[in-house]
Length: 477
Image (tube, rainbow, N blue to C red; front, side):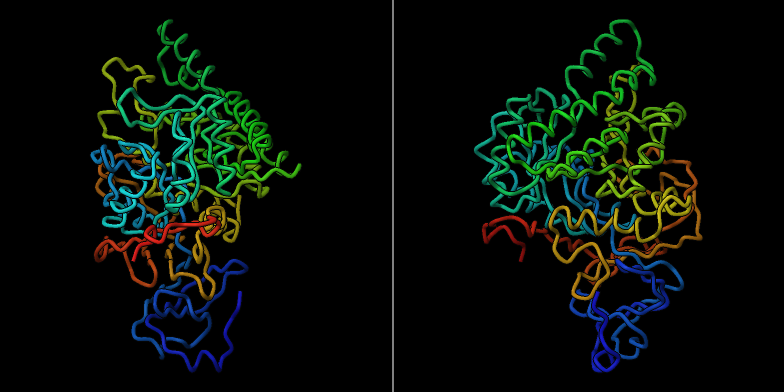
């Protein structure tokens, strides 16, 4: 990372200077000031404040790059009552996230055509408080739309190997092996990456049917219907198909160390493949699921402590490229069932507002990761994965996106503190031993702990810089 010389620093003027913080760069943690001009980081050094129009005092906190959450579900249009770009982006900003990569579901219609891609980009641009990139979706019958969505600026593509969606027209549907292989061939031509929800649909569906027919509808029964093997088998199958198709792969929300090892093996053999896991898979176990209840239902299911510990080993080894939220919101009514049948309850954890502080608590304060390793997983790694230029690190020339984190402040998660459209979460009542106190997007404060959300929405559409071409009208002014 280039550091300007003292003479150069003295000659510069800054819109804003951040001072008195412990600044986390890609290489080190330094007691330093950061100079910002026109939304960019232009200097890292000392005694900069005298040349600044305004000064932000980080008062001894960690100054981190803003998180890049590469796995967020926003349900607008069509299901805005679940979460829209306004509420979702506010929650992310309050949690220290400055950029998100938005999944093509569970909006209705799902983002599986160029027309819907461009319409939803405009919706996000008018409401999001943070910067955003958008996935395109691979579903049955939309091969002709893949290249078009790539040309409109898709960050990548998403497909489900597990059963998903409803019979509602326009809802997102999973692909079978034939559709997956043909989709991989089409996506390979774009040069973009295919992200996969990897679970064996036949096994999970048939096991669930078997258990329900026998009256087995408890939390443990749901977990038993989606054992680790369904993830590992699907990962192996997808790796082979992608190798035949020449398609770059990314596996989302892996929940087992065994699946991550399959990714590592393929990567070592020369395949272009990456993976992520989520905060909840590194924080919660099956036992927690039983205590919390339906709020903690997700897919893949939460695992035993032994599986969680094995996943942590792979994270600690550097095998995982990103840690994300898989924020999958829904109204509270969808987390309830009068018959207490866990299979009838929406599977998804609302958690984007606790990305940075909770993960810091379980990763850094526990001694599992260094601060630099933690920062790479939440910011630099996902930014590089999706080609988000000038995002994800505190370096000269990068966007001035910051999160201030107080590592010594603890709090109890409460519904009244949440910005979600439906303020419930699997983390309600949990003590979190770190706290985001301020979030800055391109040099402008968008959240403070004391004042809440600041200003108006100003999120910008982010292009994948690795995309081969993009229509000129795909970029926000």
